Amino acid sequence: MSATLEQRLTELEVRLTFLDDTVNTLAAIETEQAQRILKLEQLLSDLRHELVALRTSQSDDPHSEPPPPHY
Image (tube, rainbow, N blue to C red; front, side):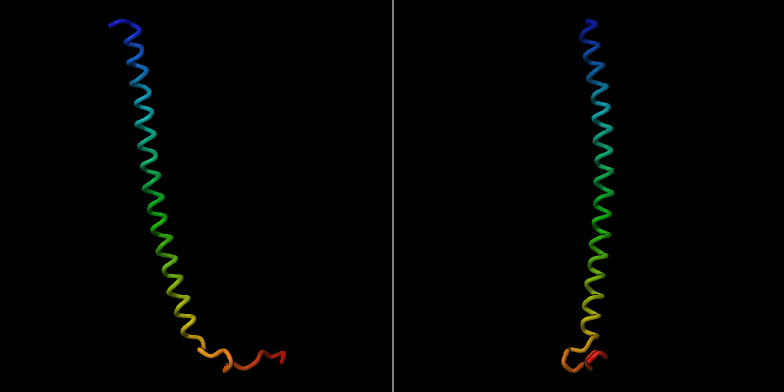
């Protein structure tokens, strides 16, 4: 092989190594982000359930509540 062809192949191998590292890094970041999204979805679901529980535990008719102290 000529020196130019060998140099080009070496450069391509180096670039491929960097690209492979970048793809692996992005895959790891995507996995982490997916886990975070799942956790946030679970927290949101928990908060919705708590809100529903709070609403149902309160009086259904706001007129049946006593007036605030300043009245």
